[in-house]
Length: 112
Length: 114
Image (tube, rainbow over all chains, first blue to last red; front, side, top):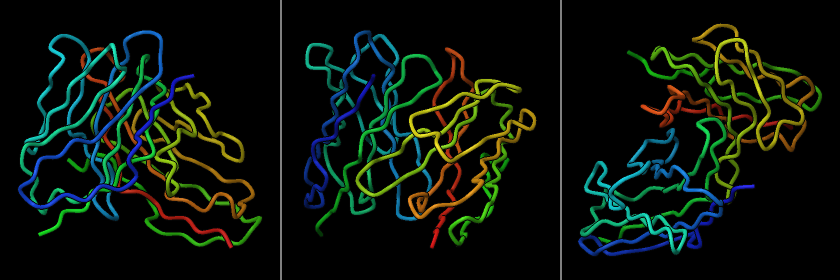
């Protein structure tokens, strides 16, 4: 079975600092990978996705993620965090368009 | 264009009661999904429907039933609610094809079972 691990439950960064959220997956073939963001009381919004090709993908709100097959990772990055980025972030994986597996999430707190 | 809508937004049930959560999408998507979200566990797939007329189990289907009423609507039914089903429920939809299978989520239903 597929699984997705987000090892950091909570992360706190200062506004303007860089951010990296970790995501590791377990699956034999190349999966299709996603990052979502969830603000309190809201549904999930897609930040970016990786299907194939260039392993560095750009998303909305200045986020990017890099797929590293050798490490089974798909880490999310942002060069300079804004206070409005405080939210919970979820990594997800699928291989067949039907069953999606989500990580347990990382809550981001931004210090002024 | 409302995207994915869910009703109700909040619900409190007593143990043993039944209820149906409604979901509709207006994006002409083929695939629809029901998830539950519990603290520290992310989202877990309950059921999905790859196309109108088909449904299949996800990770945590026990205690739930679904109906894909038509292409737009996908309902989730709790026949006899249990406290373990206290959760936030999200419906999602996607095209379910190689050209577009990112999911679009509804705002969620917060269910409490006492």
